Amino acid sequence: MAGTFREWLIVLRGLDLLVALPLLVGGIALMIFGWRIWKGTVVLCFGIIGAFLGQMAAGSMSERIIYGVVGAVGLAVLNLKFARYGATLLGGMIGTVVILQCFSGLNLSNATYWTAAAACFVAFSALAQLNRRAVVVFVAAFLGGVLMVSGLGVCLMTAPTLYGYFMNLITDSSIALPFMLLVPTAMSCFFQSSELNRRNVEF
Image (cartoon, rainbow, N blue to C red):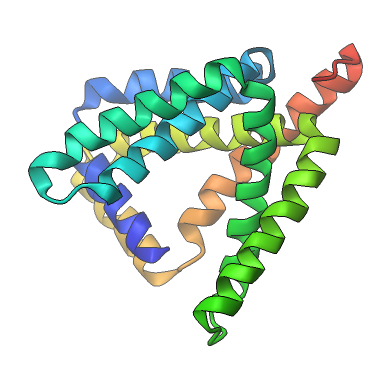
């Protein structure tokens, strides 16, 4: 997990300041109106997952872009038609990742690990099917939070003093960056849930 955060920061460090505005606007829009475009949010999530899977399957560095694009487009197009089932699968994947991270310190055998992963995926997929609205709200809120924090990060990294302070904060505390993502995600979840309850919207 720490390695993923470091790679994310390296990517942000290489982005131009002009990229910050679309990231901020897109993030805030998803955090506020994500439930209105929930099918697009689900498609975007599977596009990102497809890109990661494609890059993991690539045999060489030169193939990573091609495989990543193919994976992203393939899963995104597939979920254009099956967005409802995609939301259920996302709920299963999110729950499985959280549980496996909680027990990552245990020395489990491969058979036990994958059996537990399969059981968690089935259980959380069933829960997501029963409460699809919560999954949609969380996914939109989390994606919006990631984009917004990324935009703010690009802005910070253009100022050497602020960049140094930010990096020291991340280095000294392992929970600093997750906390920065958790706060906007939680705020967006509460806001979008209240809007859905007020309008009595179901998915």
